[in-house]
Length: 456
Image 1 (spheres, helix red, strand yellow):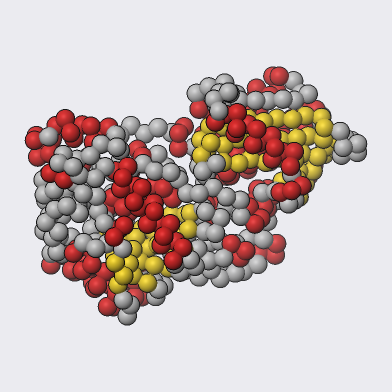
Image 2: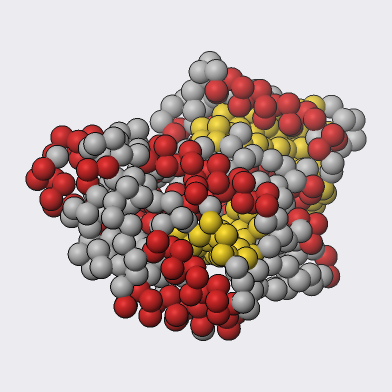
């Protein structure tokens, strides 16, 4: 029985970002390279690219000899541990990829080994060549993204390569925002209260990076500030951390995102940004803040409180911080978008008075509200810079950020690597809670509560 070595790798420049994979099949006895495969995948994540490389390598090995045994070597600790059955697969997009990889050969004929990145240079080079060529426009994207395959060089049959490319691309589509366009449904402020706007924020995603052991935090859903047993690694070693993360990643910087309580404008669904009347909380809003404070006090995990400079957020933060025994820091970058001449108006009133400006604003994140307001592109740039600043300042800590709809939606979208259209599907009630955990490798995971009762 023949034995093959499969070395595979994948990468994403942006995570998600322009991605590609490389795979090499060699003879275990002689070391001879028998097959190579590489492909530009378009925009997707590191995890999808790595699994796509694994699938391409396994399929190439099967085409050479379906009765062979295979030893897989990868520098992705995540893929190796998941495929070996030692780590639970939590991320829903990873489960079908792992299941498909497990079907290429009978499980008893495939073994997995983690190797350092420097020992996986052949596959890494192929993956980077695919990404380089794709970004330079020399080669098309994979079928799932609307074009021909980028590159596939192999001694196996062309028909097999086509099957492998198509299948890996379809799996990649499971976790690729660009492959799942969402038709916007402009809903204006009615989506979530006074400043629950149709956020068109656009900015770059979270930084790319391969951490030690290449563990992807996005495989798990972070529970902000909760000490949880991380079911990772041999013998199910238990490690306490803030959220779900392997021990070697360290605790994340966790931002618990709290939208301020109601103001008099909230029930009327009026634009209320940073350029308007700066309303204070209503009686209902203060009651919401008190309930949130009680829920967070019971949880006991918030270590700092940071608020937008606007009155409604500072008031909400003050109520919560007093209950937690903490001080409130003010961060200018957390303020709401300036809606210019639309401040205080309903969506219908803006539609009636400024139809052309509204249409332009709904169509492009670069468009500004009437009267020199702030575009969502500018908001996203500001929010991303604030995120980076606060992540560095509060590494390993759980921080309550009391802010507004547009900054919260933007933080969540960027953490998920989702397209701007995804923001049309988010609704943030007054005093609602969400959370984003930022890990050492630049990845992030999101948890949505949206009701303070979920913390009880």
